[in-house]
Image (cartoon, one colour):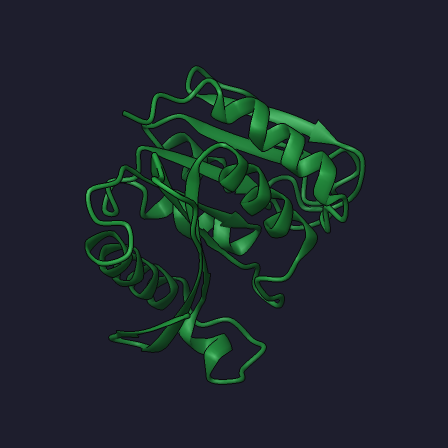
Length: 198
């Protein structure tokens, strides 16, 4: 585990290594959850099976013991700092993919250019607040210019984004919680075979 200083406090990165990795995947948690959520576990397993080293990142507010997330600007700044540090240290010389679940997926999308991500993995992207489809966050996804995977529960009350030229949307059984690690792992494994990592 790495403890990484950011302008908004200390973040933690839990490293899951593989021999001779082809790339690194940095994943962030949702607003109120941790890195042990089933979908993050499934995505990490799939990535490691495909030869990627994985870092599961806890945002500073979680490390400090707070449940309520920090403002988006702080989340983004802390995340970008963490990805840069991991890229320079543990994943030096590797192409970096970023992603996360729910709030963490939004952070990865908003910072994809700044972190030089070669691809983005979004688990349970919250397209809109439940019951309020008029408040869309699709612009955050549309702004990403690299290959993007969205894994969404078929009954997610936060909605499902549409596919696009560089965006694959895979629906799996479940809700926003995405409790099936196996379903998420299968979706991530399939998509990773389409992404050029060299």
